[in-house]
Amino acid sequence: MEDLSGMRHHLMCPISLQPMQDPVTAPTGITYDRRAIERWLAAGHATCPVTGQPLALADLTPNHTLRRLIQSWRSPSSTSTPPEDAGEAKLLADDDAVEQQQRPPEVTAAAAAVKKLLCTAAASPPVDVLREAAEVAAESDAARRHMVDAGVLQRVLRVIVSSASAVIKSADPGHYGRSSLETTRAIEAGLDLVRALAVSGDELRPLVVADTHVHDLLDALTDVLVALEPAVGTGTGGDTNTAMASAVRLLDSVTEAAGYAVLERLRPALFRAVTAVVRDRVSPGASRSALRVLLHACPLGRNRALVVDAGAAHEAIELELDAPPLSSSSPAPASAGGGGRRVTELAMALLAELCACADGRAAVAAHPAGVAVVARRLLRVSAAADACAVRVLAAVGGRAASPEVLREMARVGAVGKLCCVLQADCDATVKEAARAVLRLHSGVWSGSPCVSAYLLSRYL
Image (cartoon, rainbow, N blue to C red; front, side, top):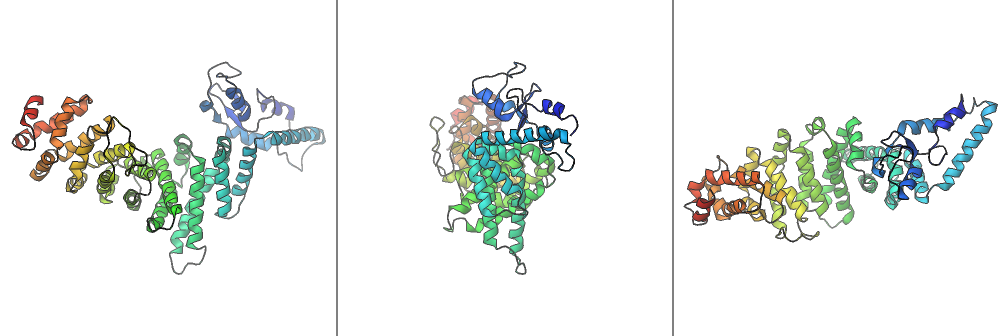
């Protein structure tokens, strides 16, 4: 190795003065070994040790280029190591041994799990290896971070894609290979590992943007949901529900990070499968993730139409019908049938998005309790839910509203709730939207026995 001593100097951590193992770079441009800088910050310091500028743990960025350089530097060619460098190479090996001994036990376990996962030649590692890795990742944040930095996420996503493809092939009577049950268990184990890795949107976004196989992943997750759907509610145990919840949660993260180029190619089967998660009440968390997936896709008109065709408006209304009454002054229990306040906000937001198209408005109006559910939630949940509920009522009761819909709005109290919005402490834009609907049909509603003519005349 040429000029090894000079190279070693540049790869030293400014804090520990030892060769770095896991280099991370601060916004100040200084690179440290992760373990050393984390100890520095954990000791109560809030500044960069070299520059003195403010520094937080979240500001650190893994330096993958330098890490690869360190790894190649620590692995000199066995056939070309000059005699004069033998002492330096031995010193490096000693450093490695010391630092391996100084590693926290959870990181050592994570490194072993990474080796098993990444060194398996098969397309899908054994299920026990995936489950062991999930247990290790769940033990500590240091282990989780080590596994993410080592590329475990990319590996397990490829496992899910290949296993989902195997599930589809196993449905072919002429196919001979891994059993469907074995493959499904591999998918469930892979999804458990993804959940244990707890990858944030910031960590996932570069992967989604750069990975040319993101469409394969979306297709695979769709196939997983379709394959697991028949087992939901059949008494086969909670593993299937857990796997479905993990799959739709991963879909939520991927669609949130994806751009329009990815979202515009989503399959109709994806929307049907995600809507089925809402319909089957897999879990409150799964319902929230499913509603978010649909919301992420709705800004594209083509997707909005597909979401309506999948019956999402009907299922969102049914979800709210099953939920207990909510009050803006008291929090909803987390175990509520619909999933609580956040699910209501997401359901109202989805209905508001779907009402941007004629088919969506028709779907809400066609449901026997559609207008009534929206009116019941108005002024009872949160400001965000109020804004979406008014958007829904304004869309359903717009210029193209049929006489039947207008009579229904008066009968179920939607008109009275819109009048209350004008008196409540709501955003000015929300009040203006409510006032516009009331003015538009005041001639019809003023003669209804279900509407107070005094309120209409006073606030319009």
